[in-house]
Length: 310
Image (cartoon, rainbow, N blue to C red):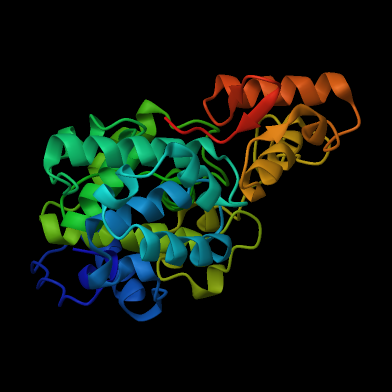
C-alpha cells in the first residue's frame, strides 16, 4: 500500500476522549489528505519495488532531480529481477547525475538478493527487508510502512525536524539520529497499523513542504498551535554552526566528472582520457582510486577503465 493509497483512506473515528498525540495525528493526517503531492511512487501502481527505488533515490537528493531518473528506471526495470539480470555498471550508468552513485550499486545488490531469496518480490517483513544488502533501518521501515502499510517509526530528516520543533521545542534535530529521537518517534506512533502508516507519510510531507529547514511556513502548519518551538518564540539553534555541504573542488566533484565520462563511453576508457577530466593529478588519482575501491569503476589491463560488469 503506497502513501497515496494510505492518504485516500477514511480516517478512523477518533475516541471520545482524545489524547494530545491523537489530536496531533488527526491534524497532520487531515492536512496530508488535502496537500500531499501526487508523486509516482505514491500511486498504487508503483508497488513495493517502486517504493523501494524511490527511497534509495531520495536519500540526500531533492524530488525534482529524482523524478525523471525514477521514471526511466522503472520503465527499464519494472521488477527487481529485471535489474538483477543487468551488470552493476548499468545501474551506475542509469543513475546519471543523481549523486552518491554507491546507492545505485546497493540498489542493484538488493535487487539481486530479492530475486535470489524472495522469488523476485520485495519482502513484506521488516526483518527480511533489513537483511537485504544496502538497506538500513530507515529504508526498511519506510518500505514496510509506505509499501505495505505497516506500523514502523520512519525517521528521515524531515520527520526529525518536525518532531524537534513541535515536541522538543528546538529549531533543528541533532546531526545524527539519537536514541532519544527514536524513543520519541515510537511514543508518537499511532497504535492502529493503518493510521501509523499514514502518520509516517504525513509527518514526512509536513517537514518537506511546510516545516522546512530554512523557510518554515508556520502560518500554513496544521499543528502550529501545539508547536513547542513556535510557542517558545522560535529560539535560535544552540550548539555548533550548521554548515552546508560543499561540492565545488571536492573529491566528490572529481569522482562525478570521472563517472560522467565512463557512463557515456560505449567501450573501456583509456587512462589518458580520464586524465583530461581534472588538472590536479594527485586529487584526480585519489578520486579514481576511491571509485575503484568502492566498486564503481573496474580497472582493466592496458590502463583501461569501465563501469563494473560483475
